[in-house]
Length: 345
Ligand SMILES: Nc1nc2c(ncn2[C@@H]2O[C@H](COP(=O)(O)OP(=O)(O)O)[C@@H](O)[C@H]2O)c(=O)[nH]1
Ligand SMILES: [Mg+2]
Image (tube, rainbow, N blue to C red; front, side):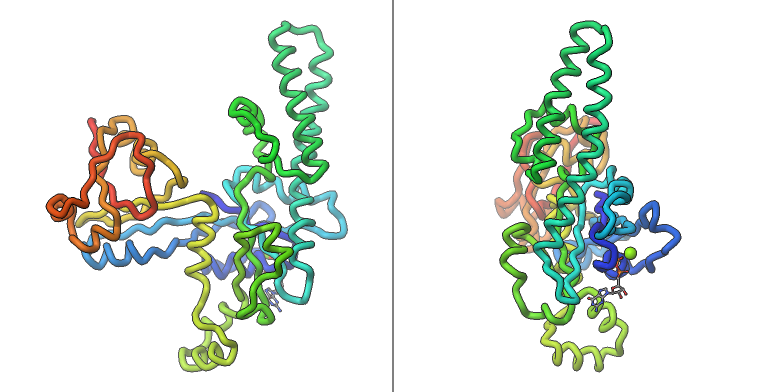
């Protein structure tokens, strides 16, 4: 899962990038997007690793890409700046939560720039289709072009009106038609307020939450500065500021789930591991996260919930205690399921 860090220049994207990845922002790398990996903390996997003492423990990860950020005064270059995120799976929108700006306005403005960038792609394609339709061609091809043109005109109108494309209720077929455009407004988004000290202990404004109910906030720069202090000083400063604990781990987990991801777990003496999959995925495709052969030859999945596993300590004991299940291809995997896939080779 690749997550693009986006927002206006100066909102704190590079600060967030360093906070999440521990990698120093590199001005030379930013124009094409600077990549870094984030480990997703998981207390369940911590416990399993302590229990099995495996050779290897592998946490889920997110790949994040820092980007140059958008301009507020001159929007002409913004579509190009957003272009490097076309292949990203999701967007982490960083809002400027310091200096007293209006967060809801900033988010609306930013979403407007996403629509603007998508509109450029869609109108470009409309122009080419209109030219193509005029040429003599087999009826079948012309009809397909006409259908695509009508769809794109609807999409362009929605983008111009600032409407979500999700509200258009596109059919699966129509979604397939537009997939190759990699529209930014169709990507999963998570909003993160890069909060200054003024936000500590305060709820986010309601007008922002109306636009982004799941918006997160973290005092990113402050936490980075505090992390560098000797432990005693840090504790004293945090008490003064009213900060109970660092929010980084909680925020990373929220970004992960906000991207629509869950994990299933595999255990053993060799490796304990968290496997990221989209929420709602069935067991057979989920097995493909481990290896395509396991998906192709899928027979059954042995499943125990993490909570039950913790009580009994092994798959074998789980069988004795009636908390072990055998599930088929269509079983919808739950977050924290401990699974062992049985497959034909
Ligand atoms: N006062 C204050 N300054 C911040 C905060 N977060 C970032 N900055 C500063 O704002 C400037 C822009 O941050 P940067 O991360 O480079 O933003 P980017 O352009 O979005 O990558 C830098 O000078 C940061 O030190 C914050 O929470 N409070
Ligand atoms: Mg930056």
